Structure formats: structure tokens, C-alpha cells
Amino acid sequence: MRHLRNILGGWVIGALLVGCGEVPKGTAGPGAPADKKIVVWHWMADRQDALQELAKRYEAETGVKIVFELFAPSDAYSQKVRAAAQARVLPDIFGILGEKRDFAAFIKAGCVANLTPAMEADNRAWENLLLEKAVAINEFKAGNPYGVEPGIYGVPIDFMTIEMLYNKKLFKELGLDPDRPPATFQEFVEMGDALKVKKMQGLVSGWAEEWLIGCFALNYAFNIMGKDKVLATFRGDVPYTDPGWIEVFSLFQEMRESGVLAEGVVTMVNKTAEQLFANGKAVFAFNGSWCVNVYQGMNPALDYGVMLPPAASDENPMSIWGNASSFMVNARSKNKEEAVAFLQWLSRRDQQAYLAQRTSNLPANKECLGEISPLLAQFADDVELTTHPNLWGVSEFPLVSETLARGLQSIVIGEKTPEQVAAEVQKVKERELLKKRK
Image (cartoon, rainbow, N blue to C red; front, side, top):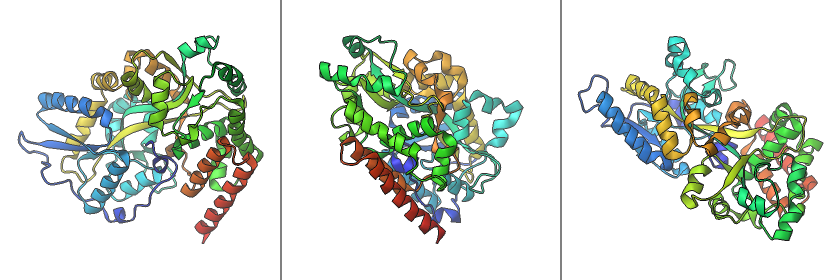
């Protein structure tokens, strides 16, 4: 979920539409003896040990063996799932990384079970355990543009948000209150002079990764223009040369000129940015809630806080990225009922609390939020502000998103102006719209 193609791009699933078939050989069906097992494919390397421990506990309780098979990184995992769908060898439980339309393709091909009856049983007992935003990622509403039967098709096991972090120790060295990070964009860029005097690096992030710089820009697009206008742009009704978009792009020029960006930020992958921030080499970072686990491993003594990106406008709220890591049940699995039962168990408080404590990820179960670390709680406080392309019902053309991200990088290094980038992005947009109409 952290790659541009998984967030704003997308891939075409053609062969899926012929159907997804049965689970791989060796997966026992309902009514099998004690060697019955449920196979789960996933991409989450940081959760593997915890998931295996939970599998042991579930087998001890129920006699059903759970086999978690890890395939990483996420791009390799996505390729495996697509190939398995085409070859009709998907496991009992798996995850889908991609846009909503990709998710819809799997559903329409018969690869994913509709979990609505189970979610809504007993006055929505299962659904009500979970964060509304996490459920929404896996839900298709009536009248959705993908032609999918309304329902909930996935089970979130944890949630993430992407925000800004700040180093409290370095704040003190700058003479700033470590409990009062900048709340407005103007306050943020005004810190540039102090950073230069102290010879400190400002904001680090993996902006060499196009999805991450694009995510930062869309935060401000929602803040400056509002959700409706941003989505109208994706539909082709508002051009990227609109003054609102020019204002968004100009923020990157302002950050460059003020000195609040770390040197080389547009050539950094996020792992490098994480190392710099964890080692106290940068005052700010733009990163996801997974960083709590990452920074703990790199520097347990790091003293930092979580903050919203400083607002550039008071006309619209600041929206931040949020997404769920979810599992789906193979609709043609011989163990469908057992698979659903396991995911219900995995969603309950004890298991969710264990996952949160072992992996430092936000739990999808609302009942656990009082049991998470103070740092994770700061991320959890902003869950209601989250948005994600899978909630919009419309998405941008992948080539437009890539052009936009590269344009932002060029602004940061001073090669192009906001106006030049806007014109280039709009030119690609018009070309893609014309292709679609033909």
C-alpha cells in the first residue's frame, strides 16, 4: 500500500474475469479431521511473527490449523496474488493491494466472499467492533461505479495514518516549546531561518517515492480547495491550471525557499528518511504510523511527537491519508465458513491488543484504542480526519499522478515553477481524457 501504483495508479486485471477457482492443494475442506487447515497469504513482514503466534493460539482453542505464508515485498506479493487468481489457486484468505477498481475486479470474478451477513449478524456485532474508516475501505456502497453488489468484502486487522513527526529535543535546542508544534503552514515555513542558524535539517521524507510526495500534496489540495473540487479535478471538470492547484504547488516552492526542507529530500527513499529522523538528524518527518515500530528499532530513546501537517487554509479541514491492512475470504474456498470464523476471532479485543502491542500498528478494533502506546494514541486521535482514494469512487489517471509527482520534485529542486508544472500536468490530463473518450 505504500507504492504509487497501489495508491493512485492501479493495474488492469483482465484474466481475473474468468473466475478464481479453488484453493491450493493441501488445504482441507469443511468437515475434515484434525489436520484441517486455513491458508493465509500476506505481505506484512513486520506482523509475521505475531500472526504465527496467534495461529498457534487459535489451533489450541479450535483444532483448526492456520498457516500464514509471507510474500514480500508488496509488489512481489501483488504479482503472486494476480497470478494465483488467474491460475485458480488462491488460498482461503488473502489480501488485495491496489485501487478500489482492482478490488472490484476480484469480487466480480468470484474471488472474494461478501461478508455482510456475518458482519451484520447479532445487530452488527462484528462490524461495530471495528473502526468505521477501516470498514469503509472494504465496503462497496449502493450505486458504486464498479457495479459491485453492495456489501463489506474485507476484514481490517489494523489501520495506519500518515502525518508529520517532530523531534522534541531539537525543538528545545531551537528555543521552541516541544509541546507546541507549528499549527499553520506560515508558522512552519517561518522556522526556516532558525533551522539555517542552527544548521539543522528540516523535513525529511521519502519524496523520491512518487506516491509519498503526491500524498503530501493531496493533503494540502483537500485543505485549500476542499474534497469536492479535488475530486472534480480527477473527473476532468477542473483543470490543474486552476488557481487552487497553483496555490498547492506554490507551497513546495515556499518550503524550498524558506529552508524548512532537508537537503536532498526528493532523492530520498523513505528508509533513508526514517534513519535520518530516528538518529536525530532532522527536525521533522512526514511518515506513517508504522514508523512507531521502525523508530523503536532504530533508536528507542528518540523523543518525538505527532502533528498534523500545518494547515495552509482555514476554509477546509486538513485531511490525512489513512488505510487499513485487510484480509479477504476466497469465495470459492472449501473452508469459507472456517475462514470467516477465524477472521472474527482475529478481530476480537484480545487478539487485536496483542497485535498492536507486538507490532506497534493501530488496531482495527475500537475497544483496543485505550491500550495502545501514547505515541500510537497520537495517531489514533486523528483517524476521523483520514481519507483515501479507495473511499472516493474516482481516481486520477496513473500517468497524471506520476507527472504531478515528478513536477513537485522539480519545484523542490528549483528546476520548474508551479505554473510550469500545472501546465504540464494539465497537458497530460487532457491527453489521457482524450484516450479514454476514443
